[in-house]
Image (spheres, rainbow, N blue to C red):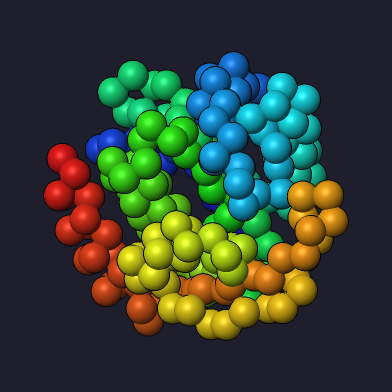
Length: 197
């Protein structure tokens, strides 16, 4: 069912390409702001941290466990972030979109909105998903507001869900969009993207 999981996805503001070594230099520059990684398990703003992040992402792709993407500015081809399909459940027509980050200089400029749109469109319209999930640190108000604005439905908090950042406890907030909700979400995202043109 997920044979077409990793395909180039073209938008008006961004292009998503399956992550490869050719994206490393540009993504490392985009990842330099420590604020990007405040709520992440990675510390990719540090050189060794970025190398670990890239190795993990490419390894997961090679093993078929995840499909990471590089997010590029359409105008210049410059890498500005990354996202991926993960927690793949083809037998249940579901997956998660996660490990999403963008260079802080493009925050609020529509790049994240369009990247999410492209990933959701591919998941629902090409991969025939019936459920797409998201999770974030329950304290990450920026990410939670972005998910609510899709809109993805808040489904609850998993308490003591993960150990992150050298053993720090994390509660995770879960969100999801189902295929029944996708037409409304699609219309909302297209409206928001048109406002950024």
